[in-house]
Length: 194
Image (cartoon, rainbow, N blue to C red; front, top):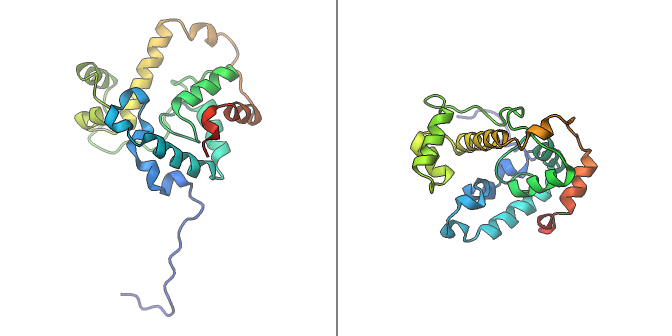
């Protein structure tokens, strides 16, 4: 029971970015690749993307998030008003490559029954190729971000085996300026949504 004098004041964090407080960013469809969604899941996706885009476009952290998501970290899903395909397009236009192995983890550590092995994720994907990342995560008792991280790693390893990155690895890594990233973002059709 409160014994202080005067009215109680509740302070909220108004500086928190919209992605941490807006319900639209909790929609799992924003973090799934288009190939992972069935027809029923795609219903209303355009409106969800538009809502997320509007909120993200008004965030004071947009420039920092966009730069990091394009240049520093190969992150999954909708980030900084962009999809994974948008960020890949920006990287292609700027001639940069983000090494998924060097980017390290992005986000909090998983709490639970222990780590899920890379092989277990790949085996589950092979056994259930039509499952979404969410369904695979439920099967393995982990988060969707864990599934996506392992699938990204598998894609990166496959690309390395195909020598696609071998030629690029010998070249010095190009680091674009913030202005270059913003110009490439402005050239995207999706940047005009908000």
